[in-house]
Image (cartoon, rainbow, N blue to C red):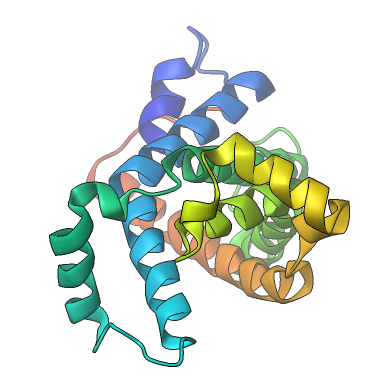
Length: 211
């Protein structure tokens, strides 16, 4: 989706401005939030929360999915959609923006220059760290909205207000350290794979490079 939007947003000279890079990343994040992330995250959060209860009602992952759909319908797998869209949209906007900015700096004006897997991995890790600091508050709200206690909140904004009122500002950054460790390696690996997959696709199906 990012590559598709990047190609659509490039100007007549094949150049992609920083605001348009952000927009392409945002579009990619929103798309994955709606099509993939929200239902998967909702099921995951509910399942993990259920397993911490004295008497878990889900016998396994697939039983949990069937139970959620049977009791709540498909809507039950889309709780916290607004927060997820904001989270994934900001996530990918930050990641792609930071990654492409650092990559261009390393390439020093030559967009055909291969920066190599090591530099790609490090650059991806930096992009991951930036996204953690940039949207952990959104992730906290999303997780609350998708948990078994989601009924306590009328909507996403109500969740934000209640966390701020009862737990304070620091609550929005709970879990930052463990998330930082996971996300940095996660994004570093993803961008390294992304670059190698793009090389393969360009070899099979040549496409223009956009700066």
